[in-house]
Image (cartoon, rainbow, N blue to C red; front, side, top):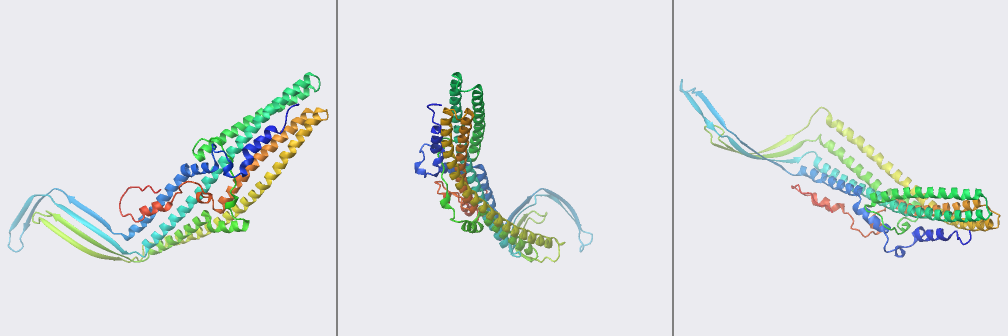
Length: 471
């Protein structure tokens, strides 16, 4: 084992690859893919997020659909055809006098009908409020999706960073084991160790190669996940940094912020508002309906003697429902039950958000403590390996003791790499649990998607089938 320094490669890897997770971005490589850059790509390209944005735009159309109840309905009708008539009539005043008419004619008519609802039990107003609540709920659902996508991007990025470092650790471990086996064989040839020592070294080398293959499989899976979430193939990844500065300073404040502003809670609140409006819409079916209808009709050749006819009318219509089988009452009861369900959903959302905050806070505290513990474990393992090596050199330790100490050091460094990954992911998880994981809070250099643009583009549109871009 002469000339071999056990901590040389392991120490350099931990410091150069993962341990810089706490460094500010200015210290990261300018040529590497950064965590912020990956989040920007996910925010722009992730299909799940873009699908939810399209869902919000579709929900926007519910408002102009509801507003259409305030607007008149105009229809045009026209008819044209060919008709043959042959009729014989007898005069009642002139005795037995008969008159015969026969001939071909082309009857046609043109007409326009306009109907305007004046009162319908406030159903149009309530449907409009309901549609607006649904739009707000859809926007909050989009925030939930944004948080989930950004958190998935962070997880995919840090998983790939971790698995890259672990793969490098395992490969370097194989190199060390190969050198260990070579030196053990040399010592066996001069009679310092037995054949058992050589076999132990060979066994440990085979196990190390197996661990490399497992690490490669995990690494390839992480690359595929990165490609799925971020949307591009990964390059050389720079270390990520925690985002503790964006979260509240204590658990109580975190719970208060989350239960008040988390998008899951606000989504439930808007769904409750929409359910309340649905009750009012259902009750509106019991009120009278008042409408006015105007009609203009021009007819040609409606008979052999009548060449042209023009009609114009304005009619007011009042409809008072008395009893229509009881369906309206059932709909009212159903809407009230749904409203009660939405109120319970709001309580459930608040409880779920609170539980997530408490859990995320505990995970973050554990991750911070775990880094300190694993760093101490690595330092102790390095000292132990150096001591075992020296003791083995004077015959107080066996080759197996050296191999075990080497494996303990590798395991400690793998644990440190995983702990540093967990530290970063836990900080983002807490930020998502509080409801603050967004491009604006993170300060990402990317144009944010504004749901209000498409809403205002379509809200007061009276006609047209062109789909606005909405971005």
